[in-house]
Image (cartoon, rainbow, N blue to C red; front, side, top):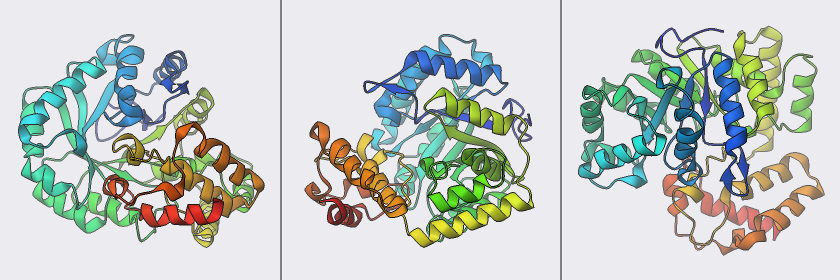
Length: 376
């Protein structure tokens, strides 16, 4: 297991992303999360990542009850974030931060990130002196390291890192499909981090599960390697770059946990044959023209669609329809998406709330029209 060369306190180069925890009846399954946290820590890893918007606030309190109350504070590292919807003025930042400490059951955060920075919300963080306030909290010992999570083009990141050299670490979306994607610019964003000497935390290494549940042709390419799982190739790809401090993975069951630990315990860069296979998988994804939604669920959890449209599930259903062309995709739309009082794609009133919080900057309103045309 390779420890972080940038932050000695980070054990290993693999982190537990707590945006997709095990669920039961709409609530976090504490028993399963406790078991997963135990396995994670026993394997020698120690970094947990959360934010208040994750699972409608349940992520933070689950960490309090399943990790902070059960382990000495020295056993784990915890990252949290300052997210746009939860403050309007500088005076609101510190009280929100103190609530986050209480929700998580800790006295300090090892890493605190300005969340989902992009060209749209960065001016607000500047106007509200969010970076300066976080700096004060760091001087008080309530934050150990200051960072950002980032969802935009390389030139925007270059501006932020130039204006705020105090940033110590940058969390970016990085996976083999997005590496050369013009809308995400993973490679260029990574290179900006290198330029400014900032270590990187990887989020979305399996692109919200898209690189696990591959189309048949792509799945066959990786299976022919006779090696690891689809997820393991994606995680090892992200971990193989020299400026990576750590790769985060959101895991919702023990099987995913064990698979990821197996990939990262003795991780090695992809060899030539594996890189060639990954390139071929990328070519297949490009030919499908799928919606690049990562199922972060900001559009439904942090902003609450007024029509209750489960947007990520809609897009997953449409992507499955395009990738697999079988009857199950229509059945999934009818029985899961519309059931339970949730709105249809055609119920969209085009208010645009969802697009304002989408880290991928997707034209959600137009894409919902595609969903409606396909299934309704």
